[in-house]
Image 1 (cartoon, one colour):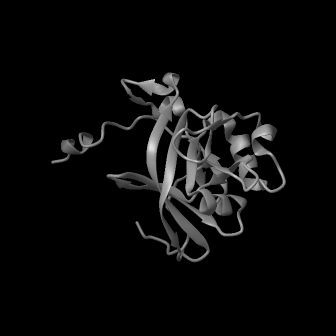
Image 2: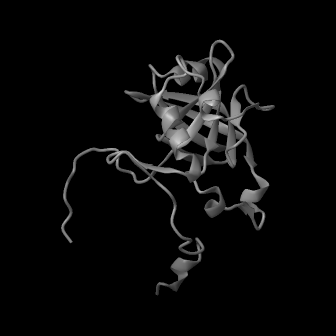
Length: 189
C-alpha cells in the first residue's frame, strides 16, 4: 500500500494525557495537562515531560526541580482537558475540578489523590529543544490505587489512562489486551 507523506508532524500516536503536578511560587498546588512525555530510561527509571517556557508549570519545575505525573482515568477526561486549557496563574485547578492535592514525601511537588497511578519525579536533566524544554525526571516512587492492581502489577484496563491524538485533538481510551509481550511474537516462524 502506498504511503502519503505528511512532512514533519507530531504524529507519534498516541501521546499520553498526563496531569503534571507542581507547586507555584506562592506554594499553591497546580496541575497542567501535558501530552509531550514518556519513558526515557529503565535504570535509573526516568520519564520526560516537555513544556513551553511561557507555561506556569515551566517556572515551577525550574524552581523546585520536581514534578509528579498523575495518570487520570477516562472518566476524568473533562478535568484533564480543563487543566490543559486554563492557567494556574489565574485558576485553582484542584478546586475547580474537585481534586485533592497530596504533598509528596519524596519530591517538592503535589500529586492527585484521585488519580489511580502517580509517579513522583526529581528533575535530573533539563534540555532546551526549541519551542519546548524537556525535563527528565528520575522516578523516586510510583503510587497505585489498590483497586487498580492485578496480579501484583498496575492493570491498564482498571487504570483506563487517557490518550491524546495531537493532530485531531481528540482524547481516546485504551483497547483490549492484545497479548503477552516477549511471547506472542514467538508464534511467527
